[in-house]
Amino acid sequence: MEQTLTHSNLRSPDIHGTVAEFETVADLKAAANAARKNGYVEMDAYSPFPIHGLTEAMGWKNNVVPWIVALSGITGTITGISLEYYTAVIDYPMNVGGKPIFTLPMFFVPMFEFTVLFSAFGAFFGMWALNGLPRYHHPIFSTPHFERATCDRFFLCIEAKDPKYDSDEVAAFLSKLNPLNVSEVEEPEL
Image (tube, rainbow, N blue to C red; front, side):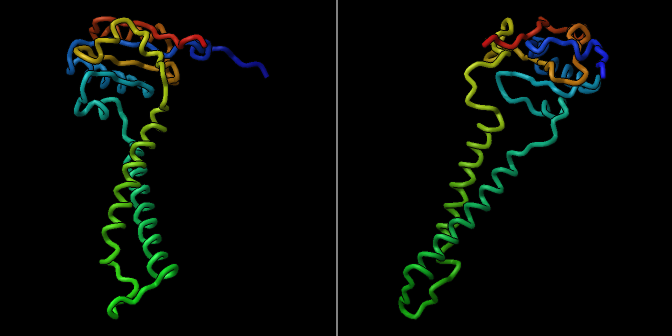
């Protein structure tokens, strides 16, 4: 069966996306809103500080980090209670002053500490995994003026993996949003 080649599936595999540089937070949020309303779903924004409402403007809704932290915390609680139960009831039971061998208040502190420890590990390693770290170089770093993303500039990248991505159309669309600069970002050669 012969595949019909359209412009969208002719895109070069070495293109990461098209990036627009903006001067203000309002411009970046407006651009993200416009891109989402125009049907783009695979995009990312870069700024020197967190911007309230930007993730909603880009249409990001699903965040798995709280679930990872919650499941890690539950695992920590179960691990803590299991460890304490095993040591106090199964491995080395001691009847001290006629008190019960297993009581929940006695084990609350280790359970709490295991919950906090496992939650912290879940957040740390979960973010590493979800962000694809360690990654020593990202294609976005080769964008002109991108070093200013750490001090006073704001960038919006519509990525080539977007189903609607067409290099020329995306560049024309981003140019209408009054950016300081629009450039195409290539994947680095390995």
